[in-house]
Image 1 (cartoon, rainbow, N blue to C red):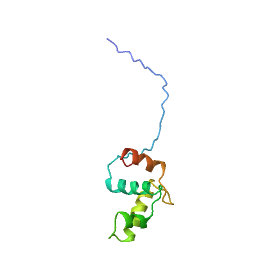
Image 2 (image 1 turned 30 degrees about the vertical axis):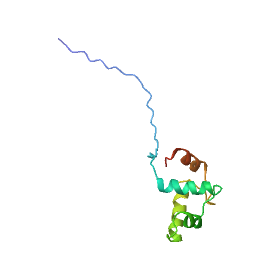
Image 3 (image 1 turned 135 degrees about the horizontal axis):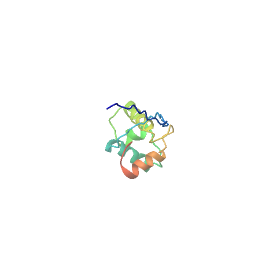
Image 4 (image 1 turned 90 degrees about the vertical axis):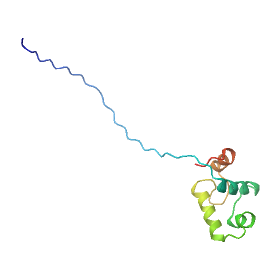
Length: 97
């Protein structure tokens, strides 16, 4: 018995996509949440001096400045110390990005 060679071919379009994705995990941060609450109680405005006067009395001002910078880096307050929309969502949900 002879073998018969059969070639099957069909053109199939192939698509290639590249994607970049950042994955974040929401977490509870009671320390930063309390600072956001302080800002909310102060007309949505936050300063290092306010943190030092109301929450961290014996803490050096530089540490309070770093807390403000952390909230800015997380986009929870803007450069003027005003709570952003993201910050307002965090106040509602208590979940940090």
